Length: 200
Image (cartoon, rainbow, N blue to C red; front, side, top):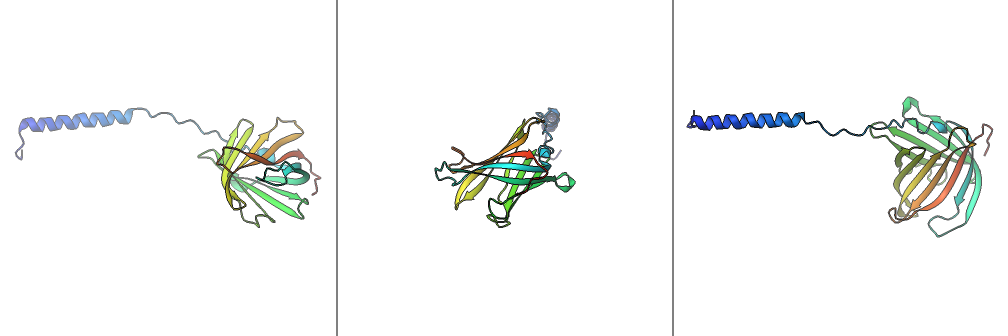
């Protein structure tokens, strides 16, 4: 027994058995159920089609301004291949020959959407950092860190989808926070109205 007494061996064996039983019991303890992730992959299906969009936009952002301007843009939404997400293309002559594109991608493992924006005049084809979030009922909130005039901000998109049959199918709103989310300034709003003949 290599110098071990019979009693010591028995003690070691009993301890090993007890430890094994404890591990086995711990393995059999059911883990808390994780909340099921809602399938939000079709949340933006309402965007498919052609739209006339009345826009209401703050002239100066994060400058204490209360001056707003109104203009019309046209938009067309379509799905991306493979169920990855969707995209829409915005055109307006409020800025000459302006084209902006939003690409939305969906992650089924987290239930989160990532929304990317770029345009041909201000971002020069470079995608903004994404805003990330999901819908809760008919309202979707998406936030992300960005910069404005060289200063860090949080950008937030809020989508509100109206009941089927409404003339205004959905509303979109953009807001900035320069104080880490303590206060927000809404600076752009628009509405989606079906219009196959819309021209910017």
